Image (cartoon, rainbow, N blue to C red; front, side, top):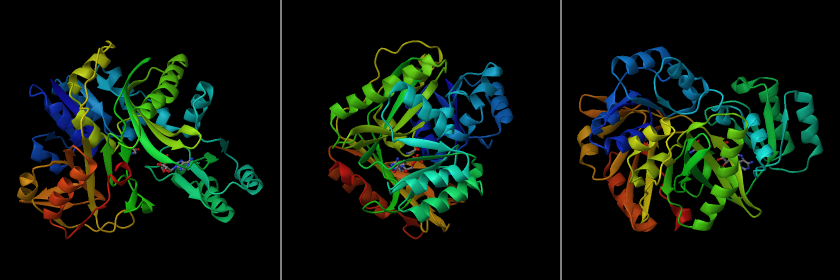
Length: 418
Ligand code: AMP
Ligand code: GLY
């Protein structure tokens, strides 16, 4: 089959490499990145929001189906655009992608389905939001911009002064272009991610994963796009996974269907295990990044076949996953990330080719025989091993062999799982 993957990060690299496990598949990625070329992925220079050129490419190259990685094209309606032209594409349509595009939309669906999530209030008027904040004593409090904010729209305010400043930025200055905020209860506990393939009312869960969001060891410092990930999450029992499926995924998928929202694609639930049980932090309308990088290598069934079946709305009997050991991935990022990343050489292409571990590339460019950084997150290196400790030894041993001049990485990925 000929398959087009939309996006340019390590997540899309992981999707492409999973598709390539079936040697019959020819995999294109648009726009992709130069690192992907090391694993023979064909990159096409079409930007992810250029739907016209993307669809023309799919037509002229007889692409069997397209898979969308990032949220922006989904929320902007790439699926609707492709379908209008009779092209097959895997992902939720514009309406269904509101699951990620609008926090208010999703909170309402959760309330209707009785799914546990943080208590919240929505505000469009600054004055009302300020009055609400002044009347509460529940700090820290969480303030979220409604709409996509590239992962930057969530603020945890530890006191009233910070909360007032944040809400004023959002509702008076319209930071991130938002007109609405959600103010919600701060939840405490261990966070984990549960993804599923969804075909209208049917869904097929993937194993649990965990993302390490903070820049520094010990979960210190500002949030990033993700500094590493593990799958499965060995300190969360199988029971937790089952409870999450029963109390979150199942009622949410059923509610979407009941509301007439035809969801096809990946549904991502960001969850937290509080002392009052599992609650939802957020839903996303796509594969998680960097969770996908460590989840998909554990898929033993053929990814292209799963997606083909879903696109034909055929039920899938069984999806097989690796049940032994753990996959652990560590992101090498630019020094200075996430505040002010500094770019430079990452070393010879050959040093990457020689690495015995799987690498997924993100913001890298190739010039002559060298790779260079041109963004924050550069490449995720991962190992599969019997235990977290063994996986850490394998990954860190190989990462240390790479050119260290312009990279930084956390040394404790997997720590919660030991
Ligand atoms: P999001 O962009 O919605 O993924 O949120 C980013 C991060 O903010 C989450 O992964 C959590 O760590 C944190 N967060 C979001 N909502 C809450 C909440 N209600 N309580 C505590 N932390 C939260
Ligand atoms: N890992 C979090 C996300 O993909 O949004």
